[in-house]
Structure formats: structure tokens, C-alpha cells
Amino acid sequence: METASLQYSTIGDIIRQYRNKADLTQSQLAGLSGVSTGYISKIETGEVEHPSFEKIYSVASALNVPIHEIVKPYIELEQKSDVLFGILHEVVKTDNTDLIIKAASACLHCKDMDSMDAMERLYHFVDRDINGDPLRLALYDLIIRQSRGHGINSFVAKALLQKYLMERNDFTKLHATYDSGRYVLHYVDFLSAEERVTLYYKLGVHAYNLRLFQESIDLCSNNVAEDIPVSLFKAESVGIINDSYYYLGDYNLSEKFLKQYMTFPYPHIKDNAKLMTAVLLAKKGNRELALSHFTNVCEVALAILCCMSSTN
Image 1 (cartoon, rainbow, N blue to C red):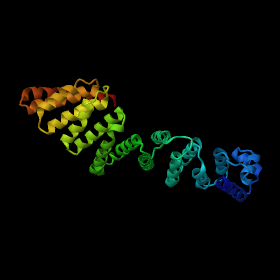
Image 2: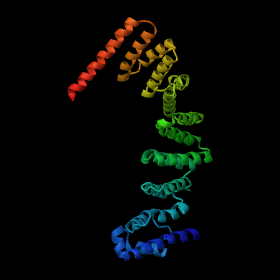
Image 3: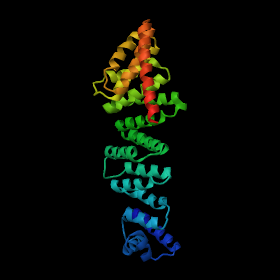
């Protein structure tokens, strides 16, 4: 408690120094910050044992005190989750990544919430409130490290998946990010059914783009085999299998999965299937019927283009 009081009195010293530098009375600062004169006085003299961060932040903002100067004592000594997550909400508005990571780490070590609940709260905070990719990646790395340290494999898996989904968009590193995605498979049993479908589909597409067609089939086949509700990812997994078998030269299996692909209730699938049907017919030697299908596809495409041009 003595250490805590010393740290918090340091905040009082900071407030007093910045107030004097601004040549403001406590009453004037109260008017600027919305915090009462009496409370400001108690902060400066150290009479408040645990000053409210919200009030400290209001006073500090009115004085243009750098946020790291007032946050450090809290993230080192505060134990309440609501206070720590409130601090995190404020520091993410800055570009101080180190401070944000320290605040997030403090949230995971709060004393009034168990490790699983704290991890879940931080994970959802990152997913919902963090926009910049570099910061999101840094926070997911923190979640991965801390989850491993506490044996919380579900959040190791979730954070690894989110990292992969972000990093795979860097097309200059397709091979490296594919390896990262395959690493997530070690934790696939800790993902929800929906997350597994996403991983298998995204990784299957990734393999397809790298022309690893058999791996693409193996990955997407997990979505065909799983007893899951109909979804776009499930449908497109079947489509990827169909295309992969085509490029492997197995036209019979390609046709088999094309028929399955056509059973899904998504408008674009019908058009995709028409073109692939024509291609397969040609590959299997039925050129006249293939030409008829190609002609139909071209007529539909031309009609769409005409409609688009007439509306412009």
C-alpha cells in the first residue's frame, strides 16, 4: 500500500507541476476539466488513496499532460479489470504501441477476473475496436504468448487464425503466409465449427493459388465432410475441389464435385457452373455440346454488359 500511495502521489506531483506551468489555479483547472476543486486539491496532496482514472485523465487532458505519464502508475499497480480496460480504451487512441501493449498486458493480469475471462475480453476488444493492422497483429501476438503461458489453447488458436487471415492478404509473401496458415492446423480442434470452416476454406484457396491442388482438395474436403449448415464457404469449398480436380486432369471427379456445387442456393453458382460445364464437356470430347454451352454463356454475358451500358 505504501508503494501504491507513493506512485499515486507522484500523479499528484505531475498534476501540480503542469498546473503551475500553465499558471492555473485549482479553481480554473476545475472549470476546464469538470473535476471539482476539492478533488483536484486532494489529488495534488495525495489525500486520495486510489484516485479515479477517469477524473485523473480529465484533469491531465485539460493540462495537456502526455498520457504515458499518468498511465504508467495505473498499469503497474491497478488490479481492477474495469479500470484497466478503461485505460486500454484510452491509450489505443494514441500511436504509442509500447504503451498499448503494456496496458493490454496489465488487463490480462488483473486480480478480479480469471485468466480465461480476461483473455476473452481482450480478444473481443481487439476484434471489435482495433483497426490498424500493425497494432492488431501486435495485440494478437500478446494474446498468443500469454495464452500459451496460461495453457489457454482456445485463444492461441483464435489469435493465430486472425493473424493468418490478416497476413495472407500480403500477396508478396504467399508461401510464407501459407506456412503460417498450416501451422494453425495444429490447433484446429480448439476452434469453433465456424472458425474451422473459415480456416479450411481460406487455406484451401491459398493452396489453390499456389497451384498446390492436392493440398487444396485435402483442406477443402474437411468442409465437405463436416456436418455443418449450408454456408457460402462450404459451397465455395466444393467449387475449389471441383476446380482443383480439373487442373489435376481428373475430369470425372471434377464433374462429380461440379454437380454437388450446383446444388447450393447461391445465384452466382449457376453462372460459374455453366462455364465449367462447357469446359468439362470440351475436355471429355463432346465439342458440339460444349460449344452450345459456351455460346449460351457468352449470350448471357453480352446481355449483362448491354444492360450495364444502358444504365450508364
